[in-house]
Length: 469
Ligand code: GBH
Image (cartoon, rainbow, N blue to C red; front, side, top):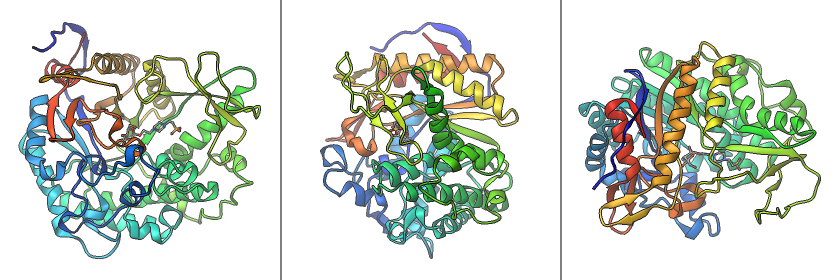
């Protein structure tokens, strides 16, 4: 028994790609198979206290060993596009030197399997699994890592470039820099503002160098980057300053160097007591600013801020606690506030209007740059009854966000596609397996996959190219 939907009449044009996304460390498992080296996420998740329940990605969805049946699952859903990431430590186990052909073979089989099924492959070169050996040499705080990344990009492009039509350099470099080296919530778990800013710059540089490599090796391919945006709202008097600081640190820190050229002057000023910015060398600005075929946008929720009065954490009337002062450099005067609901299981507020506004403002600021939603989705507590997985809340979340994207397109936004996060329940970073984002349920005891109601909804959406309601 599956739910029956009516059509909303809200149609997406042919060519608008509707699909789903995953990331290597979150689904593959097989952490030591075929010569894969350790990544910073293997190390971080093996460190007590870092991940909920002590979970690791050592097995995850065992996707590495279940490739064919997972590809068939994508056919059942009717996916038009599938965004996956390539694990650098499978290709170069220590992050430099010779290519590990056995590791590349997995992605050759994945890409061939997608093409054979008529699904468009979208490859992300880096979704956070840095080879541990590079971290031991300073990781993203070391400028050399950017050059290693360009070399890795060349190996991958040479091997897969004839069959991958769409490339993304980095996934959410903000998270790599500021969660990895600033707040320490992500691998490698460092808490050093100056290191986070240096990492930010070297990620920007890595992006620019990799785009140059991709243009040279695969001139016919589309090239992009995927950024996560903070849709920041101010709360009360004086909050415009808080909004400005977080937008500078979280959004313009990447969009300006990549799309416009150079760093925002206000960001440099905000962080001047933390770093002297000597990591920016002559010529970097030109390397980082590269023409892109589209911008990948990941959107989940909004952020509410005000200038911090030093009282924190504050207990609100509704029992929730505000987060308190910012853990990121150059924004210690900013307080992050708990938001009005409704919420997902992550505690993130549900705000489809934030997506519409984000798409509109990006397309106003960068009128010639097409956009693609490379991730949107939500974690909820699903109800499994026999072969049916009830997840009305996720269906509702997706319906409202697809509708918001449609509204943005009606207003002229050049949106090329929408990829739902995620194909499968998976290793949700610091939350381990305790949070489920999939449109397909995974039983971690048996590895059995069951398409959720939201997966059936997505299948119906793709089938008619009309939002079901
Ligand atoms: C994406 O990250 C990832 O690309 C994907 O791998 C992940 O599974 C998915 O989303 C779901 O989490 O960071 O303190 O400012 C989303 C990362 C999480 C970044 C929420 C902004 C806001 C709180 N985003 N975060 S904070």
